[in-house]
Image (cartoon, rainbow, N blue to C red):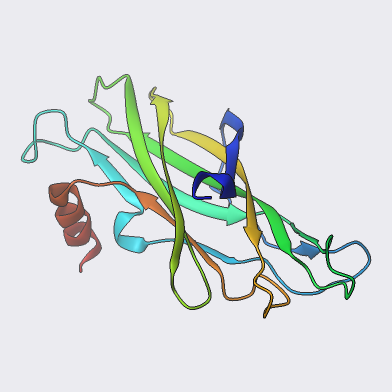
Length: 184
């Protein structure tokens, strides 16, 4: 069940341009019964700083994570009353990386997590992954898109209340440094 909510990445591509967040819509044939789950990135794990010389060295690159969901499709198969039994949507993680001017860093790995919570804040599943990024003097943007399917409980009519949360998987030191940069 845990890995069944996520399907394999359906796209991994490099893009140039501004960081965009996806808008979330919904679709149920000709009916419009509900919305997509809320999607967001936890602020204190939204940045990943790379320091090759250890924690006291200069930052060589900084990655910033954003998440967005595409249109939701509700499926009511198996119910005579038309109530949806599941919702499917694409989740897109966008990572923008900037390398410092004097850095010779050629690539980096950006480990991330995605967690899905039920309306009563119960953790339903998590997914861990890593985005490999080749660096150059120009800022780089990488995206990874997953198809996510959530079962709709019998007492609910939509995915309203579900939350999808993403962030970088940071070490304790990276988390402390991130919070300090953000003023927490």
